[in-house]
Length: 135
Image (tube, rainbow, N blue to C red):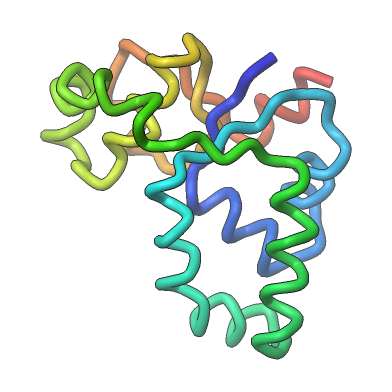
């Protein structure tokens, strides 16, 4: 099963060794993460480090450990879905277009706890609780 992972889910897994990190590490699914959004993690590096209470080195080590469980999806594979994705989510939150485009490209849900994703009805959205219940 393919599941697109929202940046906030990945950030949560970085900040705390809890359910989200365990799901990414142990759940039998193909977790997909848009290449374009990887830069968003780096942009929030200091915020993540401060919340997690670890060093920059530990931040990068943890990213490398978690990235083993996630497939980075090149922008070229989803670019042709961006117009449709923008029509679905652009008026709600244009920053989420690549998540929706990736979901369209792979015909799969998006894992996010952000409620604004639920304002659209084209793409299935899974909360963390939903993903836990898939086990």
